[in-house]
Image (cartoon, rainbow, N blue to C red):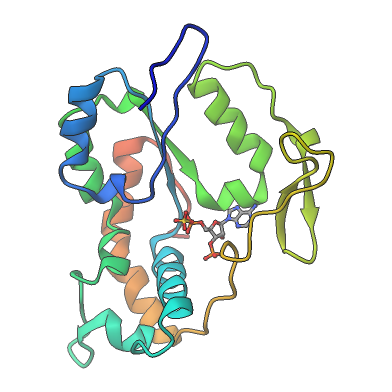
Length: 204
Ligand SMILES: Nc1ncnc2c1ncn2[C@@H]1O[C@H](COP(=O)(O)OS(=O)(=O)O)[C@@H](OP(=O)(O)O)[C@H]1O
């Protein structure tokens, strides 16, 4: 991690910190003032997205439906499958709250990052104590990509969308399996809304 000079903010990101048991203590030991930003989306869609990403690299893996259950007849969800485990946000957050106060954490809605990127980035800028430089003016909706894109990439005058690995088409998943997963996540989601003081709207 480079030294941070006056007037600079050092940022670092990885998708795996939030669920890594050792990460909260290690980050707190490095700097207990660190601000933490977590992007969360509906855990069911997240699991399907995770599966879609693995499937793109290993097309021979079993179906989403078969990986979801330890015992499908009994409706027993396989919580050891990482695609499912990662979405139990309340459990992961508990570990962070042993080392950081909730005011040092910002939870960005993955859904709103798509429907209102400037609004969500406004929250990020406020949280970091920055002026709201990034606004609506910086985005446009790209119909081909189906997502918001930047009107101008940094250091360029050309528009920029995220790459092909972001926004893949998800496979169709058995509705009953989706329903069962929604039921499974519901109590954890409600706990998460309570802990963060923010209803992400994944449960109707
Ligand atoms: N503007 C824009 N363009 C494209 N994609 C967008 C955008 N905003 C959010 N998203 C969502 O980001 C999802 C991929 O991000 P990940 O967090 O999975 O990426 S990472 O591989 O873990 O870094 C990706 O998930 P999938 O749709 O499942 O691919 C998108 O839904």
